[in-house]
Length: 329
Image 1 (cartoon, rainbow, N blue to C red):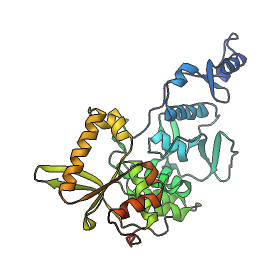
Image 2 (image 1 turned 90 degrees about the vertical axis):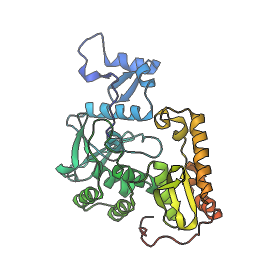
Image 3 (image 1 turned 180 degrees about the horizontal axis):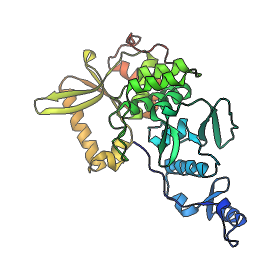
Image 4 (image 1 turned 180 degrees about the vertical axis):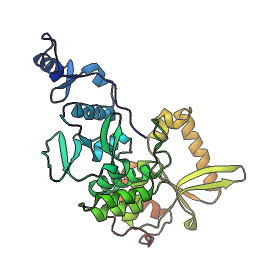
C-alpha cells in the first residue's frame, strides 16, 4: 500500500529563470501568508497547502526535501513508512528522515534527521520516483527505536493482507522477509528489541488500535487472546471478534472513531446504521453466553485501565501466555 504523493505545485527558487519571479518575492509571499515555505528554498501556494491533511503535508515536505538535494536521498524510518502507506500511530512526525552510510555520516537538524546506517541495495526501493528503504527494512529500523505500540502497529500492518491491495502495489510482507531484512541490517542498535517486535507481530490485527491494545494486554500480563475469531448462531455468521478468550467466555472489541466516522469503513452505511448494526451484533454475541467488553484509545494506551476493564469481566490477571515475547517491553 504505497501512498500517492500530493500533486501540489512546488516552487524551487533555485530553478527560477524569470527576473520578475525572485526568491525575495516568494519569501515575502510566505511572510504575508500567501505561500508556505515547505523546505529551504521551496514554496507552495497557501490554498494548495490548506487543502492537504497532515499526512499529505508530510509527504509533500518529503518531496520538497528530495528536490533540494544534489544526490537522491534514501528516505527511511518514519518518512519511508509514510511513503509506503504503513499505519502510523498518532500524527506524522515533524522531521524528515534519511539514511546515510556510517562512513559518510550526516548532519541532523530540527527538520531533517540523518541516520548513520548501512542499507543494503536489496533494501532500497523506489516509490513515486523517490528512493526509500523497503517496507521490511523500514519496519526493522523503526521497531528498534519507536514506541512499542507504534512499532507493533507497523509490523502488524505489513503482515496484514490489506497491505499492498491499494495504490497499485502488489507487495505484501511476510515474517520471513522481515527476518531476512533484520539479518541484513546487523549490526544495529536495538537489534534485540527489533527482533522481539517482529516475533510479536500478527497480521490478523485489523487496525493500529488493535495492535496497541495487544501490547497493553502483554504489559498487563493478560492471557493471549485469539484474534479475529468467527462466531455463529442459528441465523449464521455473527461476525469476527477483534479479541476472544473462549475459555473465559469473553470477547473484546477495540472501537476506533473511524469505524463510525470514516465513510470508507462504513461501506455506504450511515453512522447511525453502523451503531445499530454493532448493537445487534453485540446482542447476538451475548445470547451465546459471551461477555463483551469494548474500549477506545485511552484504555488501549493505559495498560492498567484495559486490564481493569477485562478483569472486571472475568479475565484473570498475571497469566501471560508463555509464548509471549518476554523481552518485548
